[in-house]
Image 1 (tube, rainbow over the protein chains, first blue to last red):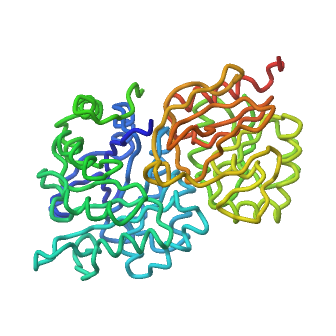
Image 2: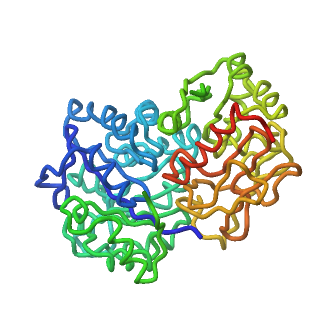
Image 3: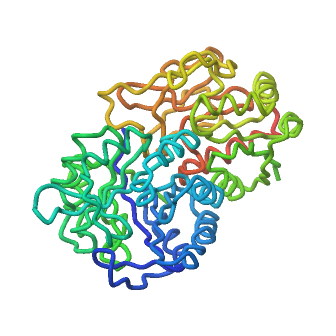
Length: 255
Length: 204
């Protein structure tokens, strides 16, 4: 049977893995290639690498980082952060990415998703959506540029539109929960699940395997986490064993 | 060390394919020259975007004929994901556009009741007894279309998602996988190693 994926996320700035809370106060968490290999050994099902560098100079490390990771990695790697045009996606694929995540640039020009899907196939195009609860408490809006700009765009509408344009997977991050370890935003997940058929990766707020099982029950196909793995709270393997005891099937017997 | 020509389509995850082949002891090199592909000891056709665009690229670049020839002769050729789909007659992804037509069959979209589409992630495969390269275990898929019946004359491995479908087929030196061996950890490495070991070994 198709198992649920556990996906460690490597947020990188200037070639180093970092992690913060709600995209701010970033702390150094290690070398991306070393962490990538360690997580594969622990049983990670795939990896996500997001470049959160503030400057083009910082982002210039990304292709080199992807190349270093790929030499050793034998699982899928999704890369995002700063993908604004087809040539950015091509450079990442040539370096060793298997899927490309698009976020802010797709909000600015949705047709980018169609162009990427026509060329690389929908299965290669991941729409990364950062969703924040509206100030009015009424639903969620899309935030871009690492959460610095609220767009007013309804997250549900945007998810459906992005899939219609060719995105083959959604990386759904709750801005409110990111780095807080208070659990995924389950209402947000349920809302998006009702609107789309493509796989959804739940992101933002994971602290325990129970949170992950809750996200899967709410409609997520896969669960992403960063802090709990970077800070050695649990290994991927430990999380998967706990998920199994909660009745969530995952891939076992990894390297 | 087996030299492997990896077809450069410009739209596939060729770096992952090359890295995996190197880890398995092969010497891969990218190419888009029809003669090189015809003459190579071994060839990999990686996943290449959407069915229609892939077929047009193969036909326009003169790569379709050497691929057809290699596969009809049973020469060592590994086709991955969409690289498998284009070997067949057609796909519902591009109605009216013929595939390479080397193997009989038509790819259809997963039914709604299967679950999320694309079928994305790790799923188990079971090879039939005649398979020499394909091996049982969990492998990584990313496909929206599937083949239900294997073509006559090929061995096959099967997978379940909204019903049984063909995860891979093999015949002589040719292996065509719907899944991605280059992204399938130890199971994928075993399959690549089996394929490389068969090359140069006498056919039985």
